[in-house]
Length: 216
Ligand SMILES: [Zn+2]
Image 1 (cartoon, rainbow, N blue to C red):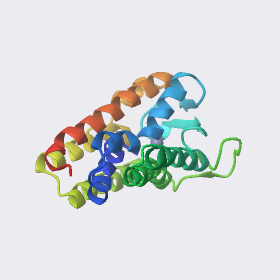
Image 2: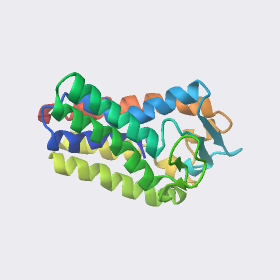
Image 3: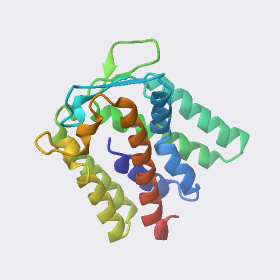
């Protein structure tokens, strides 16, 4: 899922569990993605590309059982809950942040092609509802989700504009007929991972900054 829409999930978490530091919420909704970036840069997880990249379905998340698997997420969410609820004695933070971490894999399961494993070491079946197999439809569904988060949060018009703009800004990744920066990632999966790291950071900062007047 586009980084801005994962980031928008922080709006839902803040609405439901107000008082949890927003920086922690923002990092938690993308914790798995940060892990993915690091593991790709270290060559532990693997991404491959088609010889030509015209849309995101030409980029394949070939191996990512440690960052993106159901079991790894469950362990990570449990660890986050234990740390905040038990160690720091902040039960509300523990629940909110564990849900924030888990939200990532739920959204990815809803959008990805079948590339999410159940657990490290279990190669099949792989899970994913396959929305990214039809990229333009994915863009519509994702943007609707991001706007829905904004609506529940009752954010400012500027925040809405930022969410819509960052979704539409990725249009060429979702439309094979529109050429854009995605073509530079052909054969360069490590560059792709690094740029995604930047992209998710920008998405989090955008939501954090433009939602700032209404964080509770
Ligand atoms: Zn992800």
